[in-house]
Structure formats: structure tokens, C-alpha cells
Length: 166
Image (cartoon, rainbow, N blue to C red; front, side, top):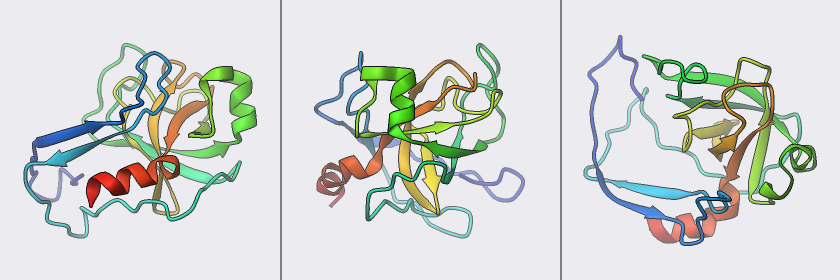
């Protein structure tokens, strides 16, 4: 959240968490949750609130950025700095060809080159397109094999999110 060479680091703790009531650990359906912090965050030019989608978004080939603290390789080290990867959205139909029944309309998929993409520890991280968080890292094949990464589609859960953050 903060450039380690720029400013003081701050820490917030979880006051409460909410897991979607339909979450299934085995299938990863409804893989979404919320974390309420113990104190507020002061926003500045480095720390900004997430922008949630106001409409559904599903444009195959459209650019997006995923970021996270996941390992740099299968059984590899964790990064010292937040990492990000430029990626492109993949159609649900094409993603279904890889994952079959694990994919539903409440998912978004991306396809990156081998050596890029999500790895262990990235789950829960944001998929952002045009400054809007459209996805949440959910699952994929281990560590940047050039296969699709799967995200929870934020738009599919906006009613649930709004209910819990009001």
C-alpha cells in the first residue's frame, strides 16, 4: 500500500471479517469476503480507496492489472515489494475449456504468458481494469504456467457487498 522508500508504514488490524454464506471451499464458488478494519485509513496520493464496478464488465482481450504478495515461483520465496502483472481478460467460454464446471458466470478469467500470473499467496488480491476492481484472485494452476487465472467477478456480488458495507 505504501512505497517503502517514501513514507512511514502503517498497520491496521482486522476488527471483523465476513465470508459469503454460500462459500464452498472445495469448489471455490462464492469465493468472496470482506474485512472490516479496527481503525480508519487516511487516504493520500499513495493510499486510495478501491473503486467498485457500477456495471458488469466482460470484454475478452481487454487489459487489466493483478497485484499481490504471492510467491515468485512454485515453492519459491515471497517478494519484498508488492508485485503486479499486466494481463488480458479471457472470455468465460475460453476459460471453461480449461476448467469446465469450476467456471460460472460469477468468474472472470485472464491469460498471461508463462512466467507471469498468480501464485501462492495472491488469493484475495485485486484484478483492476481502468481503475476499477473487477475481480478478486480465486484460483488457477500453480504459479504462472501460462494457463488461465480465475477471479471472483466483483459485479456478481455487488448487492451483497453494499449490504455489508453500508
